[in-house]
Length: 303
Image (cartoon, rainbow, N blue to C red; front, top):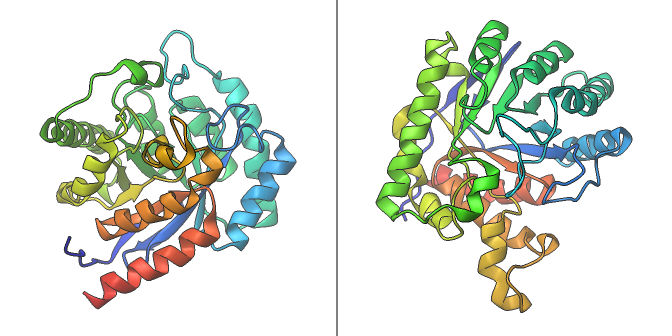
C-alpha cells in the first residue's frame, strides 16, 4: 500500500471551524446506554458519563461523541414502528451530560450520536457542535432540515439495513460492497446539500460494522481511500468492532475475542484507516489512539 498524501481543509461546525489534515483528530466515544456492546452500561449514570468524557479529553481526545441509544447488532435502533429508545428517554440521558461537560470544559467540542431529529434539535440547543447520524439522514426525514437550520457540522455514516437485520443479511461480493457503500454515501451527501447544509460541514463515515459482515470490513478498509473521491473528509470508527474479535477468535478458543481484548487489534486497524485516508478516528480509549495516530501522521508527512 502506498501511503496517501494529506490535504488541509476545514470542517465548518455550528460556532467554529475545525482544521483537518494537518494531523489526525481523535474523537472519544461516551455511550450513555445500558446495553452498548463496548462497555455494557458502565456510563449510563450521568456522573460516570461525565467522568469518562473528561478523562477522554485529558488523555488527548480532540472532540467527544455522546450517544444515548445503542446501535449494536440486533438492536431495534432505527425501527420505524418500535424504536429501542424513545426520543424523550434519549434526551433525558443525553442532555444532562452535555450540560455538565460544557460547564466543566466550556470549549470542548461535542457531537451527539443520534438519528432522531428531535434529539438533535435539543442537543444543538444544549451546545453540541456536531450531529453524527449513523443512518446518513435516511431514518428521519426531518434531520437534514434541523442540521441545516443550526449550521452544525454533520457526520453522515453509511449503514446497510437496520441493526435487527444485520445478522441475516447476505454477504456481498467485494465490488458490489464498495459500490453499495459509495451509493449510500452519495445519497446522504445529496440529502444534506439539498437541505442547504454546506459541503464544508459534512464528514463521511463508511460505517465499519454497520451492516457489513466480518470480512467485508477488511474489504472496506482496503478500499476506504476510494471514498475520498466524493470530495469530503473521512471518519473511521473501528474501535472494538466485532470484526476484530472474529479475526482474533483462534487466539482465544471461541467464536470471538472478548471486547476487552480487542484494543491492540483496534489500534492496528486505526493506523490502517489513517493511512487509507481517514482524517478523524472514533475511539473508546483516547491515549493509545493519540499515540498511534502520531506515528501514522509521521508516515504520511514523510510521503
